[in-house]
Image (tube, rainbow over all chains, first blue to last red; front, side, top):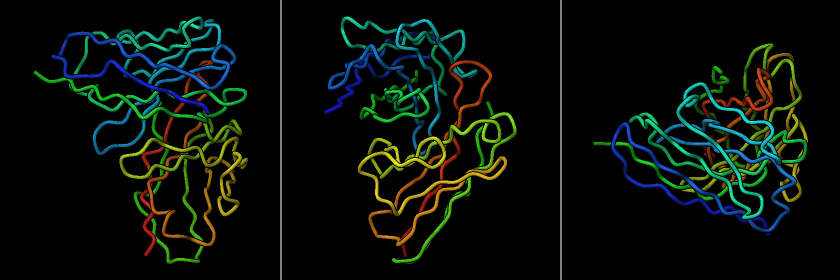
Length: 119
Length: 112
């Protein structure tokens, strides 16, 4: 059974940093791309960032480019999101999502970790 | 990376069929057969319902189907059931780089 468990969320002041983690199990982690998708309270889904199986390709939404860094450790079956210079508009539930075959979709999602940016 | 356009809400009675549209541009929906649809119940994580425009993952009811015409993708749910009441989101590859995805704003489906 595929499991994705996010952690690292919390309350942080504007301008500060936070690092999210996603522990994966139930599939061959280093065979698949991975993504972060967020959802602000009461709002829709927003793709944040994605990383290929070997970290050779990485992409970011314009809204986080230059502030967030995605990475993975295949030996630890883990995905990370380093979030710097946080803003109030980054407040959201952050989901870890597994890329499907050919990375054409997101076939499994975690339950999310809540990040609240407020002074 | 402009969001895809979905109706804010749709409704239907049990047993009926409904269709949710998802309009993008020639740079995303119109250029790639990489539209996926997700169902999200309140307080739950999204669930993949349709991928690559019209393919259903194992375990998803065949009451759910997807299609595309030009820059608009559609999700059709036939034989509506109370459990189908949820938010639905479309998503498309947006093409400017290897990783470039855009979601629709979401549609609230109410089963009357």
